[in-house]
Image 1: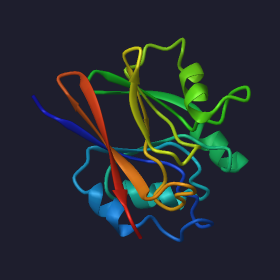
Image 2 (image 1 turned 90 degrees about the vertical axis):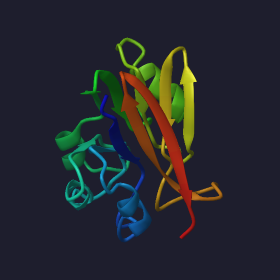
Image 3 (image 1 turned 45 degrees about the horizontal axis):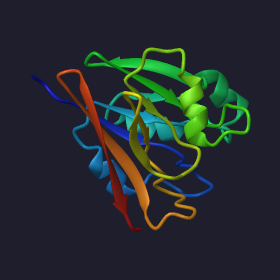
Image 4 (image 1 turned 180 degrees about the horizontal axis):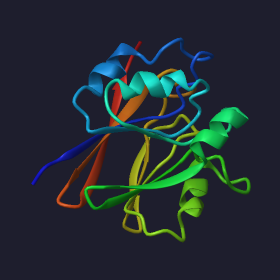
Length: 168
């Protein structure tokens, strides 16, 4: 059975936190089948750059302007190899943290995986049979030791994810 590989990134904050997507991320995405960006892109050319590698599925974050919010939306569900992946930034909620907001955003949806960002904190855990995955940020590590992005693999309708850490 074929393996579907998905590059995952969030919180690029370009051009305020980084001028471009780091080369290590672009090289890490080489050969992926698609890319997910979980918001806070800031500029739409981030999508165009990633689209040179693979099709991009993105949502808007709290720092994205009204144009980006209107263009991308704040929640989407995609089907990849029979696996339903919910995508949100993680800022929509009532005072909860990014993980709680992501859980609540998709609580009424039949999803196998939820990709979120917002906290800039990598997260890769299964909760009640759903994989919750935050790739961290490749340009603004905040309190994290390393910058990061992620890779999701889907095979036989099973989903797994890995966080890739790097220094700049």
